[in-house]
Image (tube, rainbow, N blue to C red; front, side):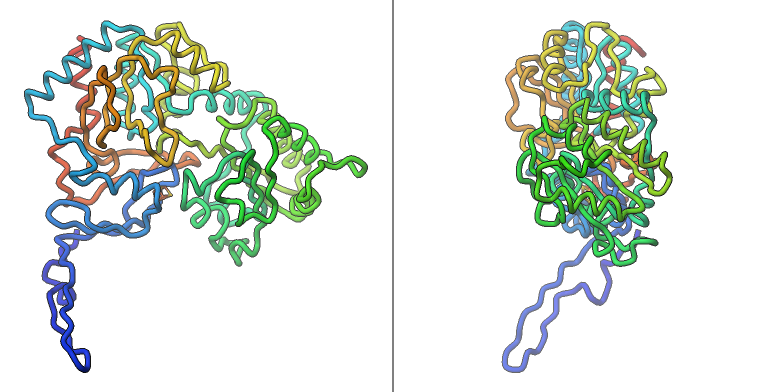
Length: 442
Ligand code: SF4
């Protein structure tokens, strides 16, 4: 930590400007820290600068809009006031009572949390005989079904940056969910073998509606969801007589032929099971032929630690999408159907960092809107239902140090600025331990 309070550059000055004096007031920072990680999404950008005054972040560098949305609200206006010790004890008891009596409880959204708190959510779900799910459980099931069936062609994001010369976003738009994905890994950076950045790559996107990324794409396919599988089959085996009826199809075929490394980023929650299977078969064929390499990487519109959740879930339950200790719910991989089935099974909810007005879609599903719930969140909730019990907490990765996994599975320790006065809020890990004591586990 570097203290710049006495830096000669940080003072109130009066400077001459030919005809008149101009008062120049420079901001004096109490502390500044650089090259920190952001846990706003699973890109985990590692070049963030924080400037602090009186124990608060007053300026940041390199955060995108998603990151600013997450960190910009950790000032007093964006948060619930911290609870007193007696209020907190009371609230935790009420939370434990609710989750213990309204069973089965759904523990939703632990993919927003760092490693230690994530572990505690598993223990709590096990103890309550509840249902333990990340925000994107349907997509995880659908994606890993293909991984099991066909095998997973994947890569580090650094390899994509260095080598990919054809990039495809399939029903995923990083300009909505992972803003700096394009500039750090997939399109604009100069890599080892893509020395001219985006001039060395072709960019394709597929979506039903117009999305923000469209103006950057050489090929843009605005096609209905139902057309995906036929489109992929044409890409696997282009037919000279009956090509896919789209203006950009011939361009895409050429781009695929020219590429030595194809990186396909897909949002499995928005892509059908058959289309996912066709995509994996396409990659399998390309890789077997051996002239090119093709990788498929999910771009989840979920918590920043989806990969951490998957790892823990695979280790503990043998499934990547979570587990159901109550044995009342089995996800089908279809998000709409799964929400209905979940609503029939669940009697209460413990949820982490729901974002009702977020850029990302971490929202409590409508089908579950009438279930009583405990919300643990660093941010102010709006609106709060009368049945909600809200417990304010420290922000993971900023006010507590945490282990997160990057989108390509790389583990990274995320630490906030040392001088940040976050001690007034308890960590989520500590809150979960207290709830566990209340429900009788410890
Ligand atoms: S892209 Fe993600 S990790 Fe990077 S600054 Fe934005 S929110 Fe943070």
